[in-house]
Image 1: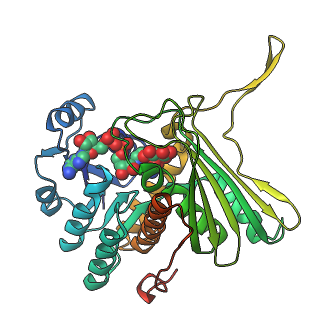
Image 2 (image 1 turned 90 degrees about the horizontal axis):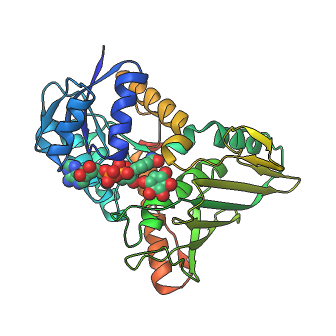
Length: 338
Ligand SMILES: NC(=O)c1ccc[n+]([C@@H]2O[C@H](COP(=O)([O-])OP(=O)(O)OC[C@H]3O[C@@H](n4cnc5c(N)ncnc54)[C@H](O)[C@@H]3O)[C@@H](O)[C@H]2O)c1
Ligand SMILES: O[C@H]1[C@H](O)[C@@H](O)[C@H](O)[C@@H](O)[C@H]1O
């Protein structure tokens, strides 16, 4: 059976996901789309020659009888409303990160899903599907570098759009590290500290940039992450785990190593779409397959909630300059790992 999908939010990643659902992946068809920018959506549907119906109301799209499952790719603050609408309609939903922009909203999703009685929500934490991070996790599980002691990371974007404001470095960008490091280390966080220093002159509209975030885990592992979203030179994701007997680095994306004109060089990607292109494909194909089986195999709304609790703690840590404790209930049995 072909999974009939409705997509809410046809901006950068919405268009990208619609193209991969339509042209690259198997088992799904985009039959409905919605965006508050109706004109651009209609133009996109025409440009891509999609057979999808354009809705001017997201909740109406969710309830449409020919829509089996939802993909939510609108701005973060609107995610909770659409995920809650999908749960109310009893339909599976893939929601791009963050699940919600506050822990309170994420918790309301968890509570609604538990009340519904069946898991319906998967969160778009695609780094868990990246071959490099999977290699790193396999090495840690095999004990290749002994027990992990420290992790050093960098999350660098060349620049950000005007819509990137306030604390999005923490709630929208850093949220990737929050999820992937918890998954990588199989650990939870207990404290967060955020340090700002000299800001780049490229940071506009009151944005602080860069940030340093320091996390401490239950096992005592110390993590430092630089989030620098106007670095100019490329899209660069770094992760280095320091273990008892060695150091493991996230592999660089494959690219040609050139010896030319008296220099040795290797290109750096500039766009998240290219950096994680394979991960998005694997993530969404697995989501289509498991959804057709009536299951959720990927990051759950509990993972999304945990990420929001941690992001909220970071926002508070940034405001207060204090070391903020992170506390969360034990994982409910409903979300116990398969
Ligand atoms: N997993 C990833 O690596 C990744 C990459 C990019 C974006 N994202 C996430 O995807 C989401 C969208 O990001 P983007 O880069 O595509 O942003 P974008 O601004 O390019 O697109 C967002 C779209 O949502 C629409 N929209 C906003 N509010 C809406 C509402 N209430 N109803 C319907 N449409 C609405 C906007 O008009 C816009 O077209 C964000 O949550 C972002 O964090 C995730
Ligand atoms: O929405 C994007 C996306 O999630 C990218 O993967 C991340 O690097 C950016 O910082 C974020 O703004």
